[in-house]
Amino acid sequence: MNITVSIIVPVYNAEEFLNRCIDSILHQEYTDFELILVDDGSSDSSGEICDHYAAEDSRVVVIHKKNSGVSDSRNAALDCARGKYIQFLDSDDWITPDATKLFVRSAETSGCDMVIADFYRVVGERVSHKGDIEEDGVMNREQYAAHMMENPADFYYGVIWNKLFRRDIIEKHHIRMDTELNWCEDFLFNLEYIRHSNSFLALQAPVYYYVKRKGSLVSQSMSINRVIKTKLLIFEYYNEFYKSVYEEEDYSKIRLQVYSFLLSTAKDNMVPPAPLAGSKKLGKERISTLNREAIAGDGIPMELYRCRKLLERHCESVALKHDLSMAETLVLLHLSQPVEIEKIEELADFAGLSTRKTYRILQRLIRRELLQIKKLRTDELQHFDLLPAAKPIIEDLRLAQEDFDRHRFQNLSDDELRSYRELNNKVKSGMLQVLK
Image 1 (cartoon, rainbow, N blue to C red):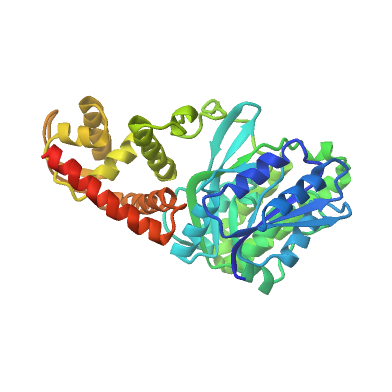
Image 2: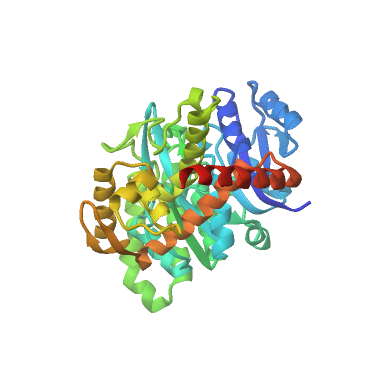
């Protein structure tokens, strides 16, 4: 059986957070995956937790092995993975419900070799958004390497869990983790993979929650001598990587930038900083909120609320990706519909917003050059056009609407779906008779 994604999670004494990690994977909107849990000789109940999930879900594969480290665990999983793509998680982290869907969709629609995504950095009850590349579209190896050079040793580039890899590239070149290293092995894996890849795409939506608290190298029971040797080894590989990407004449122009990586690693900058002043309380980082009781309730208001929140759930990643508020996203969604709108009052009513707020949103969309309006007054909206800059947003919103419909009807058989549509048309006809 063909599997699209192999999701790999090394597990070692992670009983406190393991359920959260695994549940976030098994509850993904995208379901065509296998989950490979590698129990690295845990002395707590982690192994039993893994076996329990495997007994409950056929997508879960468990490997039990003697303790040999995270790199060897990942390699063991790679040896038995069957997916077209490879996705990694650490056992005390978790992912957003749309993470795998966004990864796969980005890779499939672009045909790129690697997708890199933004992530959330979590410290206690605070969370901050971390990203780096704001370029849209597919990048070649040299373009991606240029971005990486601007922030040498940045965690965004160094880790493997905010990326989607193609397994055929990994296997063709037998790319594996270096089991002799216990620091920066992720980064070396990434560099080796990039050397054999041609195209890259940045997904500017956070899909991963990183909560590990890693200290400096010295605190990881490594001698100063071992630390220095490890850093020099990594710099040597980093330097050779750029020599392989650039022609000799071009490399000579960027040598000083490459050498800045050595300064960054000397400061131990591979460890991400704590959340900055712009951080939010954990649970408030996503745009839409839910009233759990209303979501499960019966009645017309509850049904309307459910539909609206499901639509917002699918529009949320579009808003985050394009740096829009949910209200701005929904206004663009309504403007993209085949409905003639001539007054702001009509648009506000259509979008379920106040007239004043809709007017302010339209002004912001004009300033961002997403929208052009021949005449914009507090009561008029005439001859508007969605500008070329809005095209990728509208396309993402189209996909969000498809996801919305698919999840609305996911529990219906084909026959039930046909019957539903017939009944819905009758209901619509009856409502139109009253509303005319």
